[in-house]
Amino acid sequence: ADDCTTPDLAATTGLYAFDNTLASTGTQGQSNPGCTSVRNDLWFRWTAPISGIAHLDTCGQTSVDTAVAVYDGSGCPASTSIACDDDGCGLQSTTHWLASSGATYMLQVGSSGGLSGGWGTFRIEVDPPPANDDCATPAPAGIGGMTYDNTAATTGTQGQSTNCGAIHDDLWFTWTASTSGTATIETCFQTAVNTMIAVYPGSGCPTA
Image (cartoon, rainbow, N blue to C red):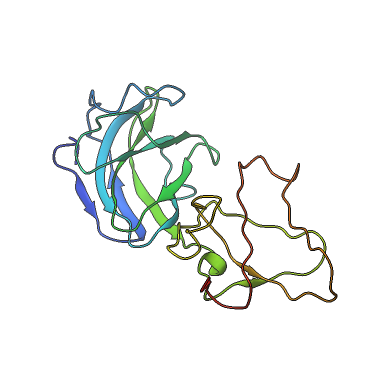
C-alpha cells in the first residue's frame, strides 16, 4: 500500500490498521492547495456503501502525528484532494466529505511534515441522509421557524417537474394548515445556501 497503484482495500466502514514505519513518501497526492504534505504515505481504496457524509479519522488511535487526504476515483490521484486534514484532533487527523453510494475513493494516510511514521488504526464511517430525504417519510412542520440540514441529502426523483426547475439535495416536510388564509414558506436571510422550495397539496409523495 506504499504506492497508489497497489492500494490496500478498505472493504466497508469501521477500523483499519496501518503501519507506515517503513513507508516512503510518494510523489502522488502531494500537490494539494491548502493541504499539508502526507509523508510516509499509505493508500487505501474504499467504496461508499451508502450515500451520506463520510468521515475519515485517526483521532486517539495512534501516537503518529498523522495527515490524511481523500481523492475521487480508484487509481492514483488525477486531481486535487476532495478532503484532507492535519491536526484536526490534537496531533491526529479528521476530515469528512459528501460520499455517493457505490462511488470509490482513495484514502491517503501518513505522517505530518517530516515526522517519522508508526502504527495505529484509522476509522471510516458514513452518516446516512436524514430520514426526511424521502417524500415517503417527511418530517412534521409547524408554524414558525424550523431547522434543516440538507448537506447529506440526495436528489430524489419525486417533485422534480415543477415550473421552478429541479430541486437538488431535497428534504421533505408535511404541514397541516390550522386556519384558512395565505400561507408563506421562505428561507430569506436564514441560510447561506442558494435554496429552492416547492409546495404540493396532500400528504405523501406528490401526484400532481
